[in-house]
Image 1: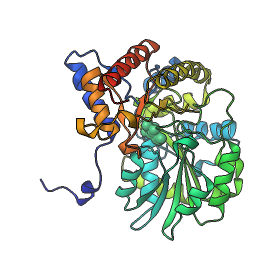
Image 2 (image 1 turned 135 degrees about the vertical axis):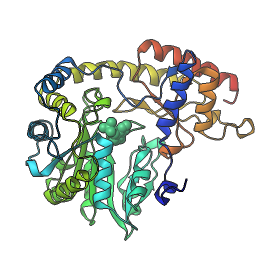
Image 3 (image 1 turned 120 degrees about the vertical axis):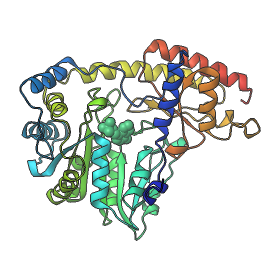
Image 4 (image 1 turned 30 degrees about the vertical axis):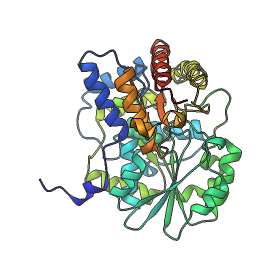
Length: 396
Ligand SMILES: Cc1ncc(COP(=O)(O)O)c(C=O)c1O
């Protein structure tokens, strides 16, 4: 079968590959501990489910406007005001089929052949491939583990080329939970402000920060950049709604209009029933979020502590999201077929029946990503198994 040349540019998402392996082993009856998941293990709050059910029963089962129902747009606008202090109008927001779709539609609407987009590493696996599908290229900018994987103004300054069209900021980030405070983000925005460059702010983990950390927000700090900033967000992570597939974007009216046109020829509206759930999630009680984060905080502390006790493992403490991204370089051994974190992930799933994701597709082959979106019981058992398996290798 001759496939489109576009397909030659991309590969299956690394996290999906791990999910498939893990599912296959579970089906065989293996007691697999899954640290691969990119989704909260909590259930969607009842009030959200009830709102979706009520919408379905009330006959909201037809097409809606492409960019979302009036109720969802109203809820998005109110959320942006309440949480971010931003004023947006209905023609400046668009609901899509998940945050991934929001970003995909944005990239298709904005970028074309020869365009470069600055992507700080480690990065979410999908950015480079989604950019390639738009004809553009990610300009990956490395950050240093010693600097908690934070981009510095100097690194950023050096990354610009005449082809730079945009930068993707993802704070807190997947996979390292890197979050920029106001001072750090301000310094980056000062560099960006001097250039002719768009900002794509991927805020899907915005609510997932720990303790009293004060997260920097692009447009709170620099309202003057509103005309060249697109915010992409999603209800997936914050409200444990990954399966519902609702994301949203907020940006300049002309861009939102172009994205809506594109989406109209692509998926049309996101699911009407899921939109009703998302409107309730954004507009209803927010108490499920701190409850979930309280649990994640305990797990983060436990996982970081355990990993730091394993010889040859280094692990910065993430400031947000629900992943850790430890350095396992000392455990690699090419003569035993362990060249990268991906090989080590393969070893861990076979030997220890623990699924983690190798770091290569996040831009750091000497690392693995561990999601702690699973029970404390599983974390204890899984970390015991990882420790044993690494000790068995005898490399560190
Ligand atoms: C950084 C980042 N952005 C966007 C998404 C997309 O999330 P969704 O499509 O479920 O809303 C994810 C999901 O893993 C992510 O990690």
